[in-house]
Amino acid sequence: MLLHPTYLPNIAHFVAMVNSDVVCFEICDNYQKQSFRNRTEIYSANGKLALTVPVSYSQKHRQLYKDVKIANDDNWQQLHLKSLQSAYSMSPFFEFYIDDLMPLFEKRFDFILDFNLKCFDVLVDSLQIEIDTKTTTVFEKSPKDKIDYRPLAQRNFKVESLEAYTQVFTDKHGFIPNLSILDLLFYEGPNTELYLKRQSLKLC
Image: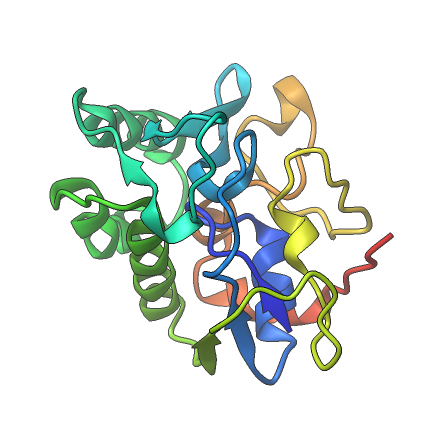
């Protein structure tokens, strides 16, 4: 299957990955704004909260995804870490996993693609799952031999039928599906892989 590397991928991305034999990451496409390439969503006390990695990109000058740089002028990594701590410090497995995730917020990364691939590596280690991966060498608009899950990177893509699980702020805002995999990991811990394998995705 074919998939875009994204920032702290949402649950649908991981459902697709754990239920596939081989994951092929798309790295030969043009960068697109307003996508999950540089954005993830978590559950805060005020509801859904978007965390966005600032990038240096102009729509006027098309750039390959792999060439887009992170705008490291501000302290975005510390801001994202504080948001995660505020949202999940009371969740059952936050303390268990947060140390594994710290390299993502302590080391400087220059390119958004490299950072997203590192996010994937760290998350797979935390989940203790094995996913066979490779990367594209050319861009194919309509791949013939792979299931195309690249639409999952679009923010307006709707994912239905994901099973509900316990979230701390459900009483305030209800169950919010398909957030960052961190939401599921901090609440379900070692059961995360079983949850992912129970789900199925329908691409419209």
